[in-house]
Each structure stands twice: as C-alpha cells, then as structure tokens.
Length: 229
Image (cartoon, rainbow, N blue to C red; front, side, top):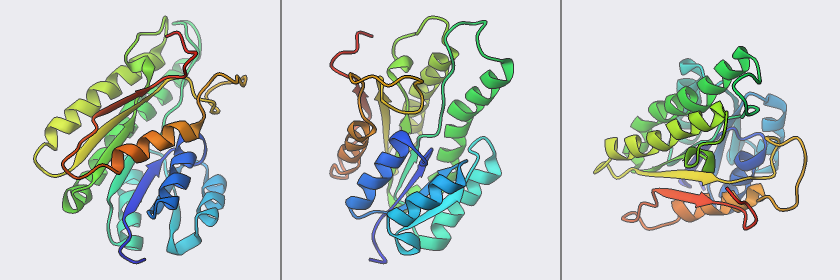
C-alpha cells in the first residue's frame, strides 16, 4: 500500500540488518536498505518486493552526504520515514597492539560517528512522522571487554541512545538501544551453535517498534543463555 510505513536500516546487507529487513517487510513495512555492499543490497531488495516495497541505497555512513542522500532517497521514493535503525558497524580484535591504526579509525568512525550521522539526517522526517530511532549497541557497551576499542565504541553508542532520547523527548519520536550479546554473524570468524541468530535480534527490534505510541522501549539487552559475560 502507498501509505504503508517506511523502515530504513543501515548495515542491511547481512546479519542483524538483513534479518530485521525481512521481519519488517513481513510486518508490512516498506524498507530502505543501506550498506556499502551494493550487490547484496540489490538482491535483498528484490527478495523483499522490488521497487514498490524495497529500495537499496549504497551508503558509507561515515560520510555525512551519504546519510543525507539516503534519507532523501527514502522520502523521494516512499514519501515518508517512520523507523530508522542505525545498525552499521564492525569490530576488531581485542588487545591494544592488535589491528592497525587504520582499522581502528574506520571502526570508530563507523560505529560512533556513522550512527550519529544517520540519526541526525533522519530526525526531521522522524519528527514529522512521530517515528522511531533504533541504534545497535552491544553487551560490550555495558561490560568493558579487555583491550577492546570496539567495546569503547559501544559504550559511546549506549550514551548516544540516551542522549538522543532526551533530545527528542516530547516530540513523539521514540528511541531504542538494541544491545546484542554474541550473535552468529560475519563479526565472528568461527561459527558456534550457542550464539544467538540474527532473527533473535530482529524479533526484539520488531517488539520495540510494535508497541503503542505512548510506550517507549528504551533499551533491550539480549544475551545467549550460555554467554557468561
């Protein structure tokens, strides 16, 4: 339907982002898919209904102009924007002497500044729709992991969720911080059957957005039953 709500997801080409896109489409949302990987995005958009129901926008969230173009693409194609899920991010090996300084820089810019840029670009449209901001944090944003700069980025995202919530208070826009534990995604090199699946996180996202307008689920921390940290 032409008036169906619109759900924008960064980091949508795989993992939690792709799973959330599928759940959102099933729930009746039109979806806007953003990531650096154009091929995967196009395939997912086709799977979710093509141009009438889903669009793919190649996006580098660390670039402000890419974020503004992404939001504008959603408005140009669908005429509204109801939910924005700032989900793009990646990790690094633990240890202050691991990884390269360049990897660190890209991770900090993506996980922190990229999320902030996406939210900032979307706020005017979300205020108009009385919509919903979601951002992907982590259990690592609640428990410091030894030698983990990734953990530091997610502590910043934890603060971002609350800072945005307070800034948007009384506008009708809701804010939810999604904090996964270990999830079976490309983040990990080796599979493990005890980890959560991306669908487990997607269901939590949809729970938050499906609440009545007066209910704001601010934080959802989700661990596998077997995770000790």
